[in-house]
Length: 170
Image (cartoon, rainbow, N blue to C red):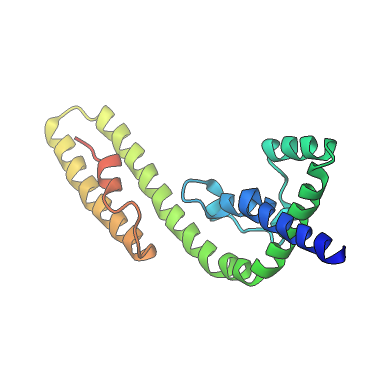
């Protein structure tokens, strides 16, 4: 009987890891390229220190109302806690090494964005075509400098040519 219960508990833990482990869902916010969280420090135990999303809360509420769902919730929290403990060294590395680099990248990217909008304002207020051409030439040089800084900070440079298109002035 003990072997069967242990086997069922292990299966439930594996199921919770595969289906939607609480810890994995919270880590996704901190590592996704599109999320703001990739620039933030991850709490060392994200399962307990980061609040649940509404969908997670709703699914856990529904699960705890059914008899079948209670073991799933228990297994999910157990698996999340184990994953948090195992991932702790990686989280420490991420917070102390990767996050400062990502913040530098974000700072340069924000400076580029600010410079772009300031240049657009200058172009709106400029009357002569000669001055507009000078402003555009200066802007193209600074755009190249910003893109080179971004390449230095991010070896992969995900946005390889994107700043040229996103911040191009015609």
